[in-house]
Length: 216
Image (cartoon, rainbow, N blue to C red; front, side, top):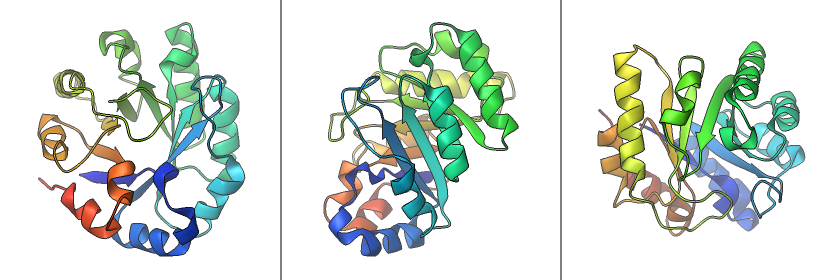
C-alpha cells in the first residue's frame, strides 16, 4: 500500500518538521493543483512545488484540478513532477484525454487520469490500457475535510476487475475522506494508493500514517 499525504492539509508553520516525518514514513507526496475555475478553490503553483521537490526525494504525485491540464502538465513536469494526473472531465471527449496521456508519458512521467464521483468507470475504459494510474475521487474535488462517498468501493472493484481481466498494470488511487475507519476496506477492494490529508495531519502525523498503512 502506498500512502500519499496531501500537502493541502500540511501545517506550513511547521513545514520542516512535518516534511521530515513524511520523508521517513512515506514514499509519495500528493500535490493538489487547483485553478479556481475547474474547482471553486485555488491552491499551489510551481514555486511551492519546487520547495517540496528541493527538500524531498519522495515521489511527487501531482493532481491537476484545472480547466487546462495540457498547459499545467508542462509547468509541473518542468518543475520535477514524477507523476501527473488530470481530470477527464476537463475535456469534452476521450481523444483529447488520450493525447494528453501520451504526451505526459512521452516526457517519461507517469500519466494518470482522475474521475469525479459522478463520472462512471465505463466512461474511461478507452483510456485504461494507456494510463499508469487511475485516481478515483471519493469526495467532490476542490476542498479538504469532506466525508467519504460509499459508491467509491464499487468503482475500485470495477477498476480492479478490469485490470486483472485485461492484464493491465495501472495503479488505483483513491482521494477524499480517507481515515483509519475505511483505509483497510479500500485496500481489500483493490486500492494501491491512498491519498489522505485532513486525517493524517490532524494530530500525530507519524501515528496517523501508520494507522492507515496496510501491507499484503
